[in-house]
Image 1: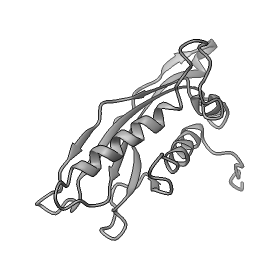
Image 2: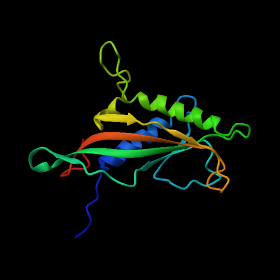
Image 3: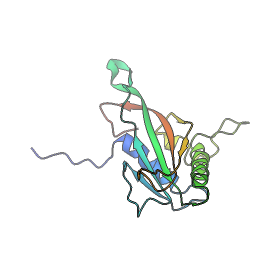
Length: 172
């Protein structure tokens, strides 16, 4: 029996792609390279880039709906970033890039304080694919003397909440 060819992509992948596309437009860093699932970046490609990785320990979603065919899920992602090098103060650019990413990601969840309506309607909750986004407290690491990275870098945890219908993991 031939394999079924799907024209849709899984919701989790769609969400990560939307995050990557959004981050490529980060104010002040437009055109920054953003990878999905790339844990090792070559020395040639490392400056001025980001990578989104999924946490190694998935959480078990809570069943919802009749017979538990829907699941309330928490997708834990880790945004890692490497800025352009600064030989004088190597961690300064990492703090700058981390702050720019936090500010840019906040547009996904931002609502007007007066009306409660989305401030950026075109990207609010990634078009309805997510129900919440928590931008965690990030941290900056200096360049490594052991050779792990010649650049300072940052890590920023992202917690995405969504609902998945296990009968159709490709749908809304």
